[in-house]
Image 1 (cartoon, rainbow, N blue to C red):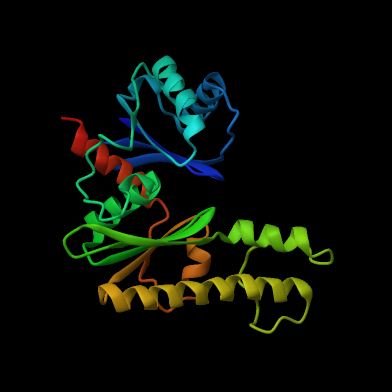
Image 2: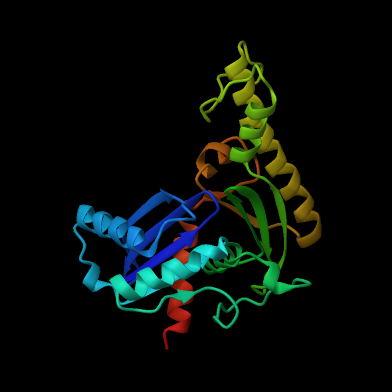
Length: 254
């Protein structure tokens, strides 16, 4: 079995694969100061709750957009799993050419998503990831990563609204009853949900003028909520990054 770990700015998603089968997965908050031992004890508890044995892990695969955390993940992996982790980055075979001015600038999570999306759906393809940032990644028919878009994420945008508008409260991110809110909470939910749906549809429309008709796949914690309100998203894959980490591991394990 292998442990796959995707470290995002806000959340860290972990999964355990037995060959191609995802047997357990978890989402935890990203804590930049968490030590290797704290990670080890946390994983020990998660494994026990899922009825899994940590000794059965033969490999650990990591993608991270928070570089300072990699060192402690490496220490945790060697101490608690007795394996050195494979960290997605330069030198790791992904099977996907990156057609960018500076390929090293592309976040590991975006590459992993693109690899998984192309493997599952082919190309051309656009992947929309609703994370700390809302990102759009485009893959052409030949399986090349050809560009992307980065917009402010839903979470940080709503927090900014709350922080800078004295009379606006924090609201639950859920489907609003109507476009026109009859109270402040519903009005904010409408602006957030329908506003981001409109952002997605417009950016995808513009991308399609450059790469042609394509499939559009959504992932990330809020993908289900926003995808329902768009006219462009074809499918939702909440665990796309974990799938991509498994695929990249399989391409490198030889």
